[in-house]
Length: 258
Ligand SMILES: NC(=O)c1ccc[n+]([C@@H]2O[C@H](COP(=O)([O-])OP(=O)(O)OC[C@H]3O[C@@H](n4cnc5c(N)ncnc54)[C@H](OP(=O)(O)O)[C@@H]3O)[C@@H](O)[C@H]2O)c1
Image 1 (cartoon, protein in one colour):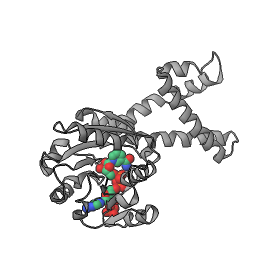
Image 2 (cartoon, rainbow, N blue to C red):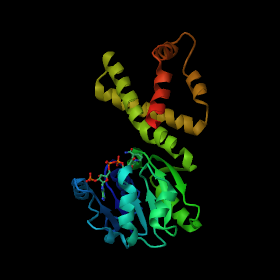
Image 3 (cartoon, rainbow, N blue to C red):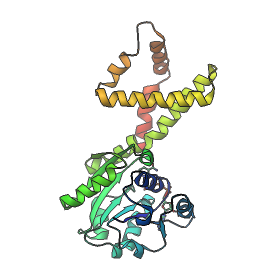
Image 4 (tube, protein in one colour):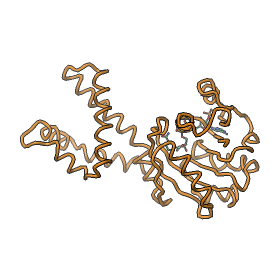
C-alpha cells in the first residue's frame, strides 16, 4: 500500500515517524510533499521516504494524509483533488474545517476522515479523535482505523467535540511538559540532579497514566490512595490548591479552546 503526505511539519513528521516505526508503510511506499521552507527535505534525509514536488505523484496512493496549516488546507485540497480517485482515503489532521467542507472540495466519493492526533503518535502512543464521512464504506473505514491505530488509541467522536478533543489531547502534551519541568525544578531545588529528576518524573507519569487506564479508578480515588492523614502528599496537595492549580488547568483548557 502507498501512503501520501501533504505537509511534513510538526504533526506530519510525528505521524511519518510513527507509521514507519509501526511498519505500516515502507520508505519506498511513502510519498511526501512538503512546503517551501525545506523542512520536508531535511526529514527525507533522516527517514529516506519518496520526496515529491507535485500533487500528481500522489495518484498511486491509496491513503493520503494532509497536515498543513488550518487556513490553507481547503485550498491545497482543491489543488490535489484532480489526483485523487473515488477509492482514495483522505485523512486530514488539519484543524479549522469540517468533513463536509473537505467533501465539498473533493467530491463525496473520496472517503474523508477528519482526525486530530497528538505528538505522541511519533512513538505510537498517540490519542487520536476521528470523524468519518457518513458515506464511507465499512472496508475503507476499517482501513483508516487500522492505519490510525498503529499510531495510538483511536476514539470516534462527533464533529462538534473535535475542537475540545484537540485541546485536551493535542494541546495538553505541552501543559504536561511544563508540569514535568516544574516538578524537576522542585527536585533540583531540593538537591536532586536535573537529568535524574526528568528520568524519575517521566516514569512516574507513565506509571500514573497506566494505573488510571488499567484500574479505571476515578482520579480522586487514586489521589486519595497516595494521601495518608497528616502526611507529606496532602501537604503538597494543599499547596497546589492554595496556588490555584485546578483553576489554572481549567483556564488553560478554556483559553486553548477559545
Ligand atoms: N502540532 C500538533 O500537536 C497538532 C495536533 C493536532 C492537529 N494539528 C494540526 O495539524 C496541522 C499541522 O500542524 P503542525 O503543527 O504540523 O504545523 P507546521 O509545523 O507549521 O506544519 C505545516 C506544514 O505544512 C507545510 N505546507 C505548507 N504548504 C504546503 C503545501 N502547499 N504542500 C505541502 N506542504 C505544505 C509546511 O511546509 P513549509 O513550512 O516547508 O512551507 C509545514 O511544514 C494544523 O492544521 C494543526 O492545527 C497539529
